[in-house]
Length: 318
Image (cartoon, rainbow, N blue to C red; front, side, top):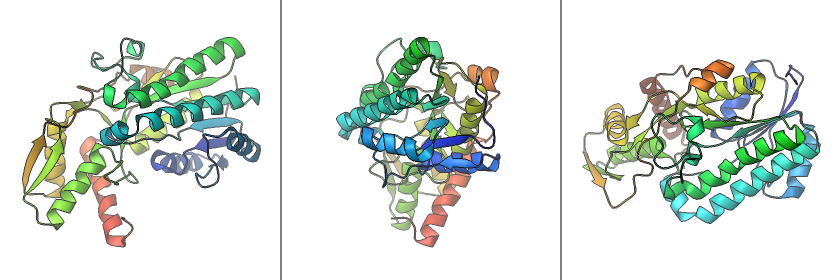
């Protein structure tokens, strides 16, 4: 079985994104020297021509595929076709071209959105096919889920070594704070800080607050991906999570506390909550490659909030 070493050529799609930047830094810190990150301005990975050019230029032996078209509930509702097509075509062609080039290992990042809407908590990998995903993000979740089918089919027919990882919602420094496309934690941080600055007496939050979510600190996610890349060689999917859930109501109250927002929280129940509950069973990741999340949730939020304050201070926030 192929083993990585310091000189292995590693291509990380999406390596200039939120998770990607943390992964690239961490993998370099571990002594890997040859890291190729295709910039979105130079490579359109929904086109086969640019995929081939990326592989030619990277001389990749290992590919870690993070690149995706993503967003929160609102972005998913507004762009279901785009999110399905661009994610599906990008991953399917990247994997097929990697197979044709006999690339040694392909690491695929799936999504917790691939799970059925009413999956028993904690979500176990064997429950992936027991129902349809939550409707607001089903096109995105199903597009990413097809890579698991492709991974397993290619291993069976071609002995192609690919692995499929299922991370929960990520958060941390470097996250996306654009209100049109951000996920819940950065969206709430920005909402509270903006309300304080504008001296508003309330914030409005989507849904009723009853849904629950699990969050994985981005540095922990990067560590999990490296461990899996180094040690895991099966096409059985693996959850990456922190092993806890928190209701949106409790999350909002915690962020309100940490941002010192003194106003009222108003719930807009006309807006969707998304999946009712979300928390992963993480036993397989621990057993297969020794991953356990290390960052306490409150501490991770404090670091994320500090990053956001730095953006404001330096004027980098648009």
